[in-house]
Amino acid sequence: MMLASLASAGDIVVIMAPGAPGLSKDQVTNVYIGRSKDLKPLDLPSSAPARETFYKKATSRDAAQIKALWARIQFTGLGQPPKELPDDAAVKKTVAADPKAVGYIDKASVDNSVKVVLDLN
Image 1 (tube, helix red, strand yellow):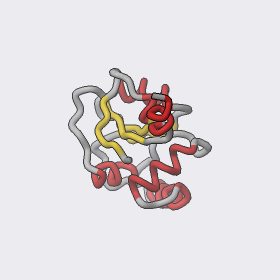
Image 2 (tube, rainbow, N blue to C red):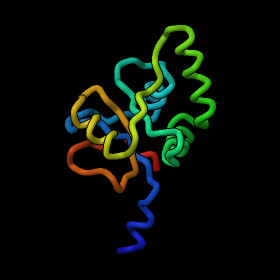
Image 3 (cartoon, one colour):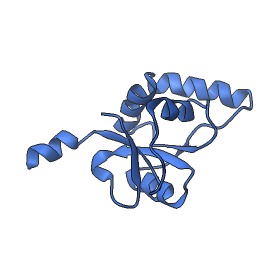
């Protein structure tokens, strides 16, 4: 049993409010690189290890590349970067309250207040 919990530590999942449709990896990528404005992306702090893991798995880019991309998007007035929240609990709370919000958290933090729409593992 303990091995199962250790194996899931660090697994990243994309979450939305219950009832949300599943998302493909391409859809998640498009939301987090500013190509799609249908959803409101949420981010963890740059100091969170899950952030780097998420961007590598979801967009095949590292966090520095994503930061540079959003700087260009902001400069041209075409959008704002994902809203940064302090931790998994804040992401879950925001996602549960807003059907247009999408975020990512550690799989171990998932509960019935949110729906996993994409497992990045």
